[in-house]
Amino acid sequence: MANGQWITKNLNFFLFLTVLAVLYIANGHMADKTIRNINKTQNDIKELQYEYKTIKSEVMFKSEEVQVLKAAEPLGLKISKDVPTRLNPNL
Image: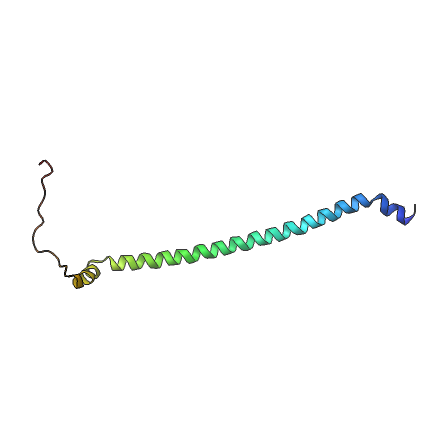
């Protein structure tokens, strides 16, 4: 059998192998892209966790009684020295 006949006889098989190779390469690129996206998302999550913890600690600090008093003082608000009165819900 001549070389030319062997190539033409197996042309469909070579095309099939070429398509498989292209799909294999494309799959590798998609997997790399997915891994990069996962790593980026994990980094974003870590950054948001740090931001959450920072904001939470700021809120905890600003909600302390001393800090609330400092913030309310310029508004003219002070702690009441009177005993609170209880409303009767039956009326």
